Image (spheres, rainbow, N blue to C red):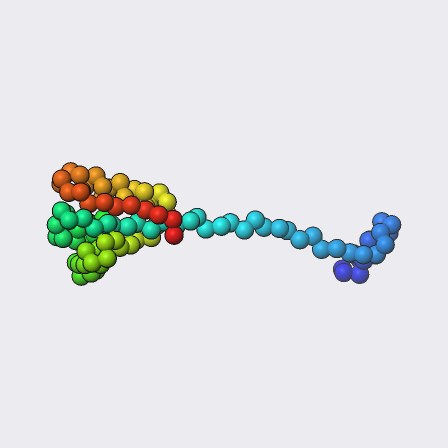
Length: 112
């Protein structure tokens, strides 16, 4: 069968070269990720921060307590890394929850 292919190529007036058609695929890039950050303040109770981390970021009590201490000592901590839409939603949920409970807790996001 391969011999027939070469013969057909010669009959068509080609110079005998046979090429291979390569399909090019577009390589999709992963969407950028965003860090969600909690900032320290002098008024929000530590227990409230722990509750926020458990509720909105699915942390265990021990994990939430550790992150809360990091926020307290360093002034800021990364609480998760997400796609833009998810990070934006989590920031909005945390900020709304803090406002409804009359706490000045700040939550932001930045590109990783």
